[in-house]
Length: 256
Image 1 (tube, rainbow, N blue to C red):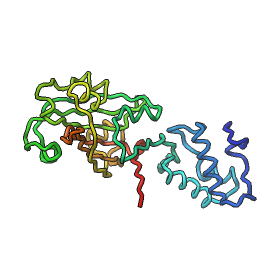
Image 2 (image 1 turned 180 degrees about the horizontal axis):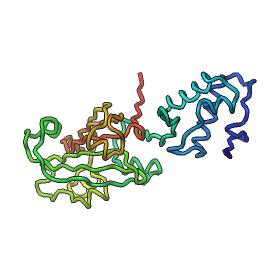
Image 3 (image 1 turned 90 degrees about the vertical axis):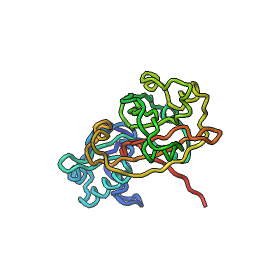
Image 4 (image 1 turned 90 degrees about the horizontal axis):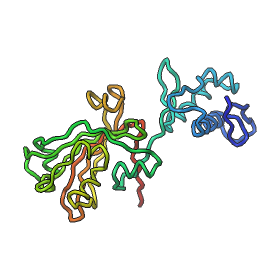
């Protein structure tokens, strides 16, 4: 290994005089190595046995260090495969309203879209209630894969309120593949999104969603159901966002 952090190699002997537990020192070393790119996404960290031999510690100590990294979302532990480094999760403030493109660019990532489906479909009860229309009303719907640096991170199923498209041609597949829907609404309908109401829940990936997000059946995902309103208070879009839980998480700041 060649990683160096603060003039100390990550695998250098531990300092027994430090007033912190050995497992914490090991976790700190490995975390720094991951942050610096010594171990990248998909790489396997040294096993418990290897850490035992390397640092002269007990199996309980090395296990505690790896458990700490797993708890921080830096690795996943797979039986028979070891401790695998995962991609860093993207934090999205849950109280902040922004389009996917804007959010990714702000984090130094390149956003892109892959349009999977567009067309008019009857609104079910959930969509109808959110957009304040009658159930069964034909409503424009799109399904788009959301990518960050060409890697799938989410799936967006969006419905546009029918009144907005009465005198406007719905967005084409090409338009949806190159720009944010918020941007399209502003440029083509004169609609600026002012606020949104959102529910966030956990679920397991199944069927087409698992395949499109490139996760295994039953893997955890995050689902956000959001109704966006124009600045005059009228519903403009209802969207169900399915995010890979290993690459995306919502951040909430609470005050008292």
